[in-house]
Every structure is written in C-alpha cells, then in structure tokens.
Image (tube, rainbow, N blue to C red; front, side):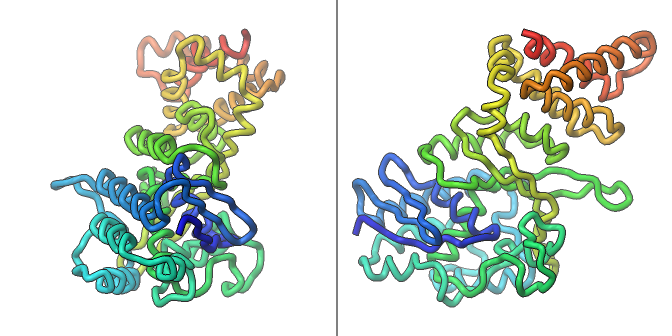
Length: 376
C-alpha cells in the first residue's frame, strides 16, 4: 500500500494539529494532496506503514528532546483529571502502564504500525469513529468559548467549531503528535492583579507547504531553544518570527494555551495569525537591508526587549510603527524617525545618571538597527 486517505477536520485546532503532523512526513519520500475534507498521502518509496512509523518515531524524538531529563524534566503532555483517564485508556490498549511516557507511546505505536496490513492501516488512520474521547487540548475552543480565536460567532456551545466524535487510535495519536511538534515553549503574560500567567505556545502551520520535514522540524526546534519573547504586540511577533525563520516557512497560527491542570481543562487565551509570506513580500527590501548590514540578531533583541516591556506602552507603539514602516509605509517611517530621535535625544542628560528605561533602549536600538535599513 503506497497511498492513504485520511480525514482532515474542516475547522478547529485539531485541523492544524493534523497539518502539523503532516509536516513531519518526509516530503522527499511522499507527496501530500489536500482536497476538501481529506488529505491524500502518496508514498514514493517505502510502504505506507513504514512511512507513518518513521513519522511517529520522529515525533517521539521531538517529545524526548522537549521533556529533557533529570530534575528539570518537563511534563510530556499536560492533562486534567478527565484527560488522564483518556490517556490511561490509550496506554492500556498499547499494553503500556499508566505511568508510561508518551515518548514511549509514540515509539510503541510506530512498531505497531509496521505490523499492520493494508486494511488494518486504512481503518486505523481513518481518524474518527473509534473509542477514544477527545482530551481538552483537542477542544480548547469549547472551554475558551468567546475568547478563542476559532469562535465562529454563534451562541450555542454545541455549535462552536470543534471536532465531534471519538477517535481511532491512529486518529488520536496523529492529532496528539501534531500538538507535540507544534509546541515551542511557554510565554509569560500578565494576569489578574499583575500576577504572571504561563501559556503554552504552539506554532501551527495553516497549510501543507512544500518543505521537507527536516527543515520545518529544525526551525521549530530553533524556536524551542530561543524562547519566544511574547505574543503581543502581534505586529512585533510577525517581525520577530520573520527574522527567526527562513524565507520559505509557511504562514502560522500562534496560540497561547492555558494548559489543563487538576479539574480545569485547556483553554486558548491568545490566538494570533502570522502571515509570514505576505509580510516578507511587502518588507522584502527592509529585511534584505537588515541582513546586509549584519543587524538581524540585534534587531531581534530590540524587538524582544520591546515585547517584554510591561512598564511602558511606548515600546509597543514604536514596534507597531516599525512594522508599518518596514512595509514601505513612508508616513510611518517618518513618524518613527521623529519619535525615536525625540526619545533618544530628550533623555540623553538624565540617562547618564540613572539606568535607561526599556522603551529608551528600544528606541536606541531602532535608531541603530532599523532606521538605516529604512533609509537606504
């Protein structure tokens, strides 16, 4: 068997989990076609069971690297009390103990796939119509309701756009695998009373883009090591990711998810569309000039500092102006130049006696790293 058709959800976060999973398939060894509600995978060399087994083994490797070892070991998959019951059922059916890690589950499932015949594989990967319920990370739209980026505007909670039904083992683990490979770390956002809140950050490709698994995995792996500075302002996130990822990276959905714990389910707190392709097209000259001058890392640092600045709104407004100016907006470029010059020169005397506020450092950074590229 060298061809497989799998269900692709029409909406909701599980659609993007599935696309993330398919990004792990080696596109040098397979072709993927998305048609309406299905994805057709055509293997160019190995039997389909072997191709999928290799993909699940890669996911196991990603999870192993993410969780780490020893005292600093991270939780592999966060779960509420109800989620743990679902996970225990999956582990039991793979003859694993409830304490088994999902690294072992994905690796075990890879071997399980290798033993399947064509009919078994087709039924297994069908997706829905099985026995496994959805954990809350598959339905954060339900619990986020009007705050979620996938809210479709209707009032009934039974009408919110999330996948309905139970999953086969293959359907369950492909979606869970997509969650694993899209997770890049944690961001800190202000919560009630100024207390910090920690959100799991997911970078979800919105379409099956023609890049190899190795490329996309390496890019997300780089983000896991770098640590994303935040999700706001959205314009700053688009610029930072454009400077951090290579030119042929796909458009993304950046999700800040409050993980499940105790009896509390997962909830989407932040959802940002990241149109990397269209931004890069409009900001091409600016990005090329920044790279030519060797200022990419410094400008990323400046943007990161501004995104983390909770003491002033000035940093955010400067980054928003830079976002517009970088796309050939002459008025924004002029206003940005005037503002950073005024901030930098206006604080010159007082800054010799005291530490510089972050917004002033951001202003100076834009003056040094961005304005020369805008003026060239």
